[in-house]
Length: 251
Ligand SMILES: CC(C)(COP(=O)(O)OP(=O)(O)OC[C@H]1O[C@@H](n2cnc3c(N)ncnc32)[C@H](O)[C@@H]1OP(=O)(O)O)[C@@H](O)C(=O)NCCC(=O)NCCS
Image (cartoon, rainbow, N blue to C red; front, side, top):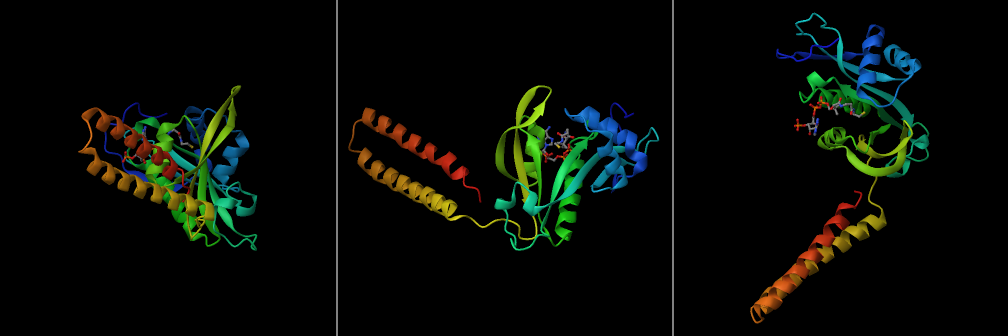
């Protein structure tokens, strides 16, 4: 189906997915994902039934398959009120028409990776979500061991908002998932009072630690070499403890 190696400089075009893509779409999903999608999913994708998708093709392929998918992204619109991230959003709670774009699947065949194709596909999704005035965010789940995808979404400035324990059940095993969100149209929730207090506390601890370090440095000159080393170590430990605390602040 695909060239084993691409020896040319590809010219990638992005287009909607259509009925003629059905077979290739199924094949790529089967080769990229550990879960099997049923035929209804693919029929809905290629016919645009409740699913909005984009495909990537290489129009400079030497084997003539210039209209064959080499990458795709599939999405669905979900209602904010029925979503698991409604408490992470800024939206008008009196309105029922607020929406989100959920990324169902994203993939690029191996030979075409690291060329920026997934980035372009996800940028299409973000552009689409931003163009819907009721839309507040794009979100998705990634299985916790999929490091390339995790790096990818972080690079695309998606925010990792939650780790969901045992979210996936695949072939008799449970796997955690990470929930990523990209806010659009002012969808980012303001900080809660708890988060503001946590940030202030982390800042004050940092300040205290610097002051303590300065006092210590002055005092240090009067002490023996052994006692200086010992105390310096404990100061470092205190600083390190601060790092995970400030990292866990949500906003
Ligand atoms: C994840 C995936 C879609 C990335 O596609 P891609 O077209 O290669 O991605 P891009 O070229 O746009 O990569 C952009 C960034 O993602 C990150 N990235 C992509 N592949 C990576 C890898 N193998 N390891 C670490 N980071 C990676 C990098 O930060 C990269 O930016 P850089 O090249 O400037 O370092 C692709 O690896 C894939 O199809 N994987 C299998 C299916 C899958 O896991 N889908 C996602 C879950 S639904």
